[in-house]
Structures are given as C-alpha cells and as structure tokens.
Length: 360
Image: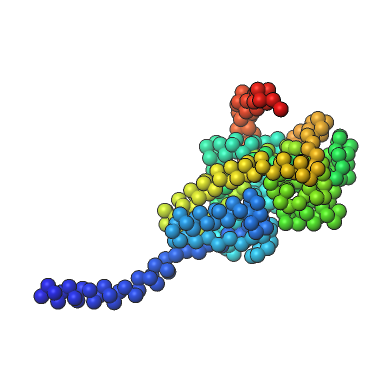
C-alpha cells in the first residue's frame, strides 16, 4: 500500500518536472540599457557595462540587463526619451544631457565651481539631493540613481596657449553643461557634440578646442594628437555625476528584492567608477606629457575671476521662473557652503601640507 502510494506520488512529480524549467524561464525579466557612450569607452562605457553585468549577476539572472552603446538602439543623447517612452528600461549617461527637459538636471551632474565627487555623494545620499532628484524626475515617470564620477575633470585641449580672457574671444569650444554658458559670456562660441564625435570635430576644425573628461579618456580618444595645451582643472566640472535612469513603473513592478538589487548595484558601481577613474587618470597623465609633448597649464587668474562672475549671472538665469529648479539650487548652494567650510580645514590644507612635506 505504501509502495503503491509512493509510486503514484513519484509519477505525479515526474509528470510535473518538464513544466518546471519553462515556468522558471517565464519568471525571468530582461531589461535594455541604452547609453550615451561609445561601446567600451574607458570609464563611462566600461562602468555602464559593469552595472548591467552586476545587476544580472546579483539577481542570478532573474533580472538580466543588456547594454546598447550609443547609436546601437538610440542616438547618444536619446536615452532619456527612450526610457520615458518605454523603448528601454534603463539609460546610463549624465543628467545635464537632458537640460532641454529641465534646467534642474544640471545640479545632479554638477555646476561651475560646485561640489567635488565626495561632496556630491554626501549631498545626494544624505543631504536631501536624492529626494529632490526624485521630485524632478517624477513628472517624467523616471527614477535617477547616482552611479559615480570621474572626479575632478580636465579643463580642455587647446591648439594655442590661452593667457587671458582676450584669447578666448571667438574661440570655437566643445564643452558641455553650464560651463558652456559661462564660456559664452566670455566670448566663446560653444558647441556640444556627442562624445564619439569629439576627435573628428577637432580634426576637421569644426571646433578649435574641446573638453572631454580627463587624462585617461582624453588619451584614449586621441585628443593630444590635435592639440598640445591641456588646461587644468575643469572649474565647470569639479566632480560631475553619472546616472542610471530607470523607468519608475517598471522598477516598482519588480519584486522588492530585485528593486534592492538595482539600487545596491548602482551604489556599488558608484564607488567602483570613482576608483576606476582616479587610478587610470593618475596612470595616464605622465605618458601624455612624457611621450606626447602635452603641455599642462593652469587657467590664468583673470579667466578664473571672469568665469566666477559669469557663473553668478548664469546661475540667476537658470533658476529664474522655475520654482523647482530654484528649490534644488537652494539645497545645493546651502550644502556647498558647508562643504567649502569643511574643505578649508581638511582637503585644502592637507594637500598643501602633503606637497610641502614630500616635495618634488
């Protein structure tokens, strides 16, 4: 009797077994991630791929993310609309590419004379920045996650030496973000090309100068082959943020554990991305100078002073007539004020003391 019962039970189990695999497969979710970057571009493209791979691995394939580089599914600057329309579930880019949607996005990338990467992380994670970011993106049905930074960027590549504001007049400069608006006020002709087109624009003479990221990316893009004067640092991008945009409805439709995996993967990628850029920029600077004849320059004092005055004008224009952008600006500025006070007693004197003590 027991034996018959066992065999009957075994038969039911055997009959059900073939259904198990298809049922599990049906439970898997696949997302498309579009990016603004050329495939495997140093720093940006590579860390976008790591984010996609990390989500897939942490979820054990329950949520798999397939990456599409710029132009493979949508144009480089088409990621925001792709996610908002449902054509893709995620996008890896930087927020200020969407300034046509709302000027508030600049503050989640970074603004001239703004926050460094650690300061930016503090504001977003613990200073109210993420709540404001959510408020800005909510009306588009999106959720933004901070996924890292390049750290302090480089100011740009110039064919001729820039000694004063007068040398900037009429210069055609490829530059992104509100830094472009600042340079416009200094007499510069500003243009924005997608990352993958910067070298061609420089080579053809469509632009006289260009900023991209820093030594690692700029060396890989070959910008040193076109121009030799390399200005430091990018006062318009002291710690620019990268983002992962997610379709909010599709995110909330995930089981809670998968939602947490997406969030945690973004946080882990943020730390890894900053470390990646820091290490590779350190390694790339020396060969640029030693092997390629690049001449490093600091911005002249009169340009810094003029840019500071221009930024105040641009900032007033950005917040004018936009209550939400003004709200974000107020939070950013209040946090930056405190960050500057701490930096005066921490980073600034530490770096100065390190140079005095170690010399060379």
